[in-house]
Amino acid sequence: MTLTVRVIAPDKTIWDSEAKEIILPSTTGQLGILGGHAPLLTALDIGVMRVRAENDWIAIALMGGFAEVEEDEVNILVNGAERGDSIDKEAARLAYEEADQRLQTAETGDNLQEKIQAKQNLKRTRARFQATGAMVN
Image (cartoon, rainbow, N blue to C red; front, top):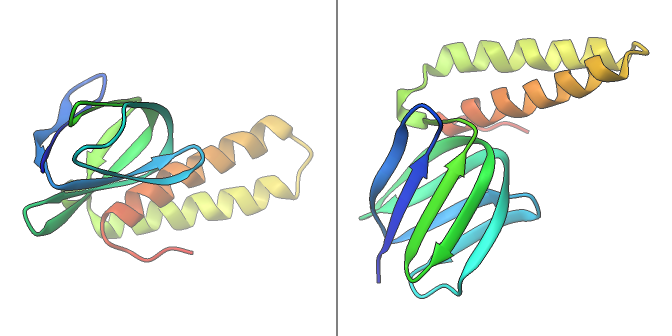
């Protein structure tokens, strides 16, 4: 059984094709979807979505949003998304390291807003870096 999967960001459609399986970064953990899945509406966290089209897995960095599953159709509306194969791995690594350093600096200070922003930025840069195939702890 196949799924029809659409990943839609405010500025463009990232994915609109058939897939055999997807793994989503839901707010409660990783969520696998196969054909015949029960209807579902779930919030998505910042993280990496994996799509199995034919025998290849494709990674897509998601910046949070929602997913709806109904009758083998999966509609994913996100704040932002980027395919891993279109991300410059070295630039993503540098951005991740910089965000990690910024978080470490923010954690030593007293500004709560700065800490929250630094944590969110680290999650976004980690998702982009992981989508390139990099292993991040």
